[in-house]
Figure 1: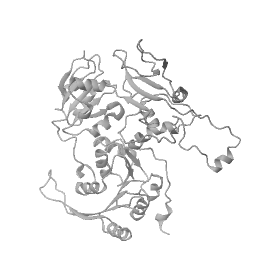
Figure 2: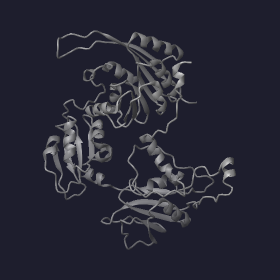
Figure 3: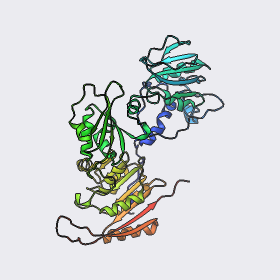
Figure 4: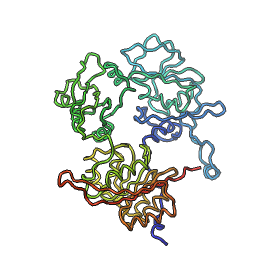
Length: 479
């Protein structure tokens, strides 16, 4: 029996991708167990938008917020649970709900409701002509209150933007747009941008507190308009980040939502040197011009910055065949210097990339130097047996080396439907093993590259040419 058959793939528990987290966020309300400690009503985590259809309404009965998707137990469960009391079931919610944002210093909208649930931070106006109650602090309490309200009109007032704070988005996902309407409000960032004539659709928002400096650096590109939300270091730290990325001449505006705070128009290096204002609660809008090349718009870290990696031409071609997405899980089997994984992570900072055969300290040093994303994961065990503990990949890049035959077969077996795999072979033996695998599984891409590097600092001549064979496969989609 071949050695590669000894590695039994294991289905590990992999963390959800950012896109999967966004889509599953609202559905978690429907799957919460009644006996579990109810979570607090906290603002949902920022994530990329996704198209999520609300839960289906079956037989005209609205679901409870805490109802489980599968109501009927299996035969085995019914047999085992005959002597166990059934769990508490909340009443279905028949009310129509409107969620809106409010503040005490602005006029409230006209309410057409039979009941107002108001957040503790708000003081409802005196002319409200319906009963006013405090917004329940937990999801289970909110579920009970809405379930017992009957077929009435309920208004929920939250402080700030209801798309960020409060239960609006989750109510909409659980009950559907026929029963829930969420009225968007203007947040402090929108108010600050409006002072200089921008909207959220005009720029890309980077949250320094959530992404951290490496995450912001990985996303900065030349000729883009950004709104950067500062962390505890203040707005001057954003100027230093822009300088670190090579955007010393970037045009920046320091602007606050408070109309009484003056707007400052600066260059990035001036923002770094300018004294921090007493109330530094504003945002930095930056137009990235005047780059010195430190922040590269194109993938392909020069091979001269490593000891022995594939040339840029081979890495760029491999990435063009792989087409990795930000929400996909990938394997990069390159050894000590994961150059392609770094190129990959720079273009898809949120992608989870398992760098097989790379040490933690080595990967951290490379990621910091080349401004890679936060999704890089070091996997010290570079053997094919170490692949058994990794989650199944959507994308695989494999540079032929020791145990190449076992690695490529294991990677192909573990590749998910519609997944892509690219293999690079540089030596005669590895090219022979690659051809043997290609006879069993015909590739969709196949190209030989001959690369000769030039040394601009030394003598004006080219090095000896080296040949790289690249092959690419694509697994059929399920069904």
